Image (cartoon, rainbow, N blue to C red; front, side, top):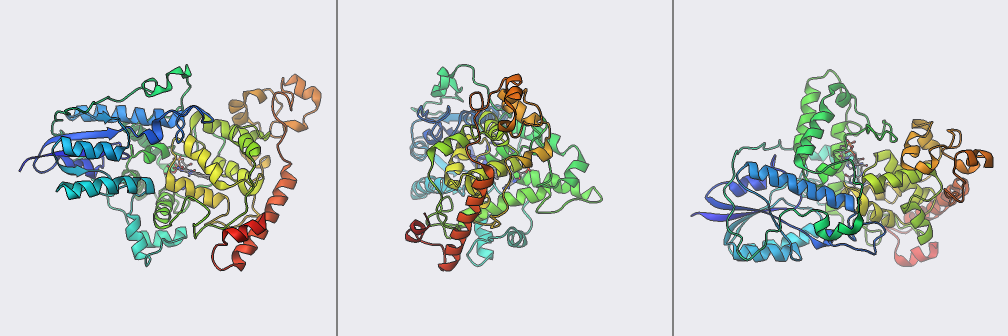
Length: 513
Ligand code: FAD
């Protein structure tokens, strides 16, 4: 019997390697509704936030999403369809309503492993199943099914990368695009298809001329960027992270495919397969964990651990997280967030985050270490929140996983190894090009002082038009004494964590303060 199908897009904003879309158009599908519901959780303007955007998302990521939706709509139109964009509250409520009103017999959407997505989808699935609607929800955001890996590991997520890689095996290949047209879109009845809004139509109109990230959203951009990244086969074969220059910004040292993977504009299986094809045609190539394929496996690793760890995104109640008595200092936190610590390497990275929504991996290391166990001893959850909001590649599993790592709360425990906010960046960029670009206030500071401008004599500061303490802040801490203090506190916390069997409780934590 013929039926209407609903393809519910959330991530997976692409046509290629999209098994949910492929299934939606198959069989006796007469009408196919491709739908995206604008989620107020991410889009509703919050004027109290520290920078333009919603409470959970900076403007750059909202813009990236809108561009991705516009591109998806264009691609669907080429296939004889189009994207229906709906708003009107909680996406689960909106979808339940249209399941009723549009006489849907088949509901397809990509499986989502994040807690928010799981709760949302459970509500919709319950309703659909109870109403006799077929539900198809394949896994296509990641290479592997986290639940399968966890099952293979006896019910617990593997906690080291090496053990994960051993268990994971080979991913399935992408499904390609086995169709050249899609069934027509039906009548939407009482629902209003608002189309893909502009950022102004979302209520961000009063912001004037906003300068957006140089990275544009959408599947077309993703595929173009993938091809450009992989054109130099030697580069792909020799890719080795953490080698690479974190200060390279005009031509970043890595692919910058993360925002496209985050929104699913790019299939991780296509990325993986394309790199593997290059490997088969070169004499030698690097291997995980440092290779390009190795980077994709880091993504998988964090997805798997995040999926199998209750309270993964917090310290309390998270059994893989060390309990550490982080300090609470809103002033210091704000100086870090706003690029006002007085350490140009740190501040330039934070400005890049705000302006571009993307920074190199080692730049992320530098600022995350500085905020937590390196200098300021502030809770990783606070830094996580800032990244979560401002990154265009902001990803629940990967962001939390890396903050746990960098703060030595989980996965990595060598807390005595601290990135210097002065010498680390200098190794890559001795003249400070990166700093001068993102902190124009320091553009005329001589290279001898660019990483430590507070040491410049007054006459040099005057000539550079930058008086420290007036035009650019003095350092908020002395790195030498702050890092010593951090090591001490980490040592005490680690001792208490290992003395108590399992993570220490709230009471023990109070003793450490
Ligand atoms: P490439 O080096 O070209 O790697 C290709 C892909 O592999 C990336 O796009 C990404 O999907 C994956 N990958 C690479 N490194 C990692 C890693 N360490 N962990 C997991 N996956 C990885 N990445 C995000 O995608 N979203 C985040 O929210 C995020 N938050 C981070 C927070 C901190 C504190 C740190 C230290 C790292 C974070 N990362 C995050 C990981 C990493 O920095 C980025 O994935 C990477 O810099 C993206 O650039 P790229 O696409 O050029 O990476």
